[in-house]
Picture (spheres, rainbow, N blue to C red):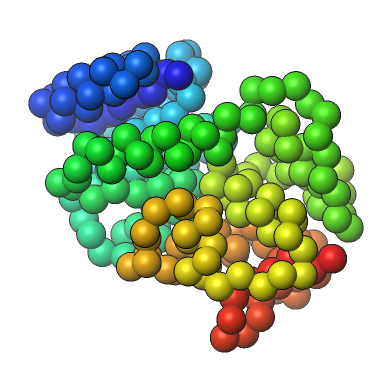
Length: 225
C-alpha cells in the first residue's frame, strides 16, 4: 500500500516515513498543500497523512481540493486539540484527525483501520445494497441517490454502509464511534453528528426532513427501511 505523508516539518516526515517503511508501506512525501494535491493526482496513493498548518496551501484547503476528485482516506495532523478545529477538518472531508505530538503506534493503527475499510474501492463492481432511493456499490465503494453518484468520503461510506446493513436498529453515538472508528474517540462525540449531517446533505432529497437517515432523539441514529 502507498501512503503519502505531507508536512513542512522535515524531521517529522522523516520519522513517519521510516516507521511506515518498516511496516512494509511504500511512502511518498511532500511539504505543502499544493504538493499534496499534485502528488495525489500523479501518484494515486492509498492514503494521505496531511498536516493542517503549511505554506502555500494549508491542509484544510488541500483536503477540500483533493475531495473534488478523490475519496482517498485522509488523516489530518494538527497542533490544535480543540474539538471545533477537528469538526472543521471533518467538514473539509477528512476521515480522521490526530493531534501533535502523537504516538507513532497510534498513527499506524489509524492508518491500518482506514486502509482496511477503504480496501474494497479497487475491487470489481457487483455487490449491491439498495434501500429506497439509496444504493451502495459495496465493491466499488460508491453511493448513489436516485441513480446519481454521491461524493462520499471513505468514513462517510463506512457509516452509511453500517447503518444500511442494520436497518431500523438504533445506534448511540458511542456505539458508532467504537464500531466505525475502531478506537476510543469519546472526546470527539460530535464527529458522528458531523458525518450524519453530511450524509443527509448528500443522500437525502430533503436533508432537513430525512426519509432514511433518522435520529432517535436522546438515543442515537438509525437507517429507516
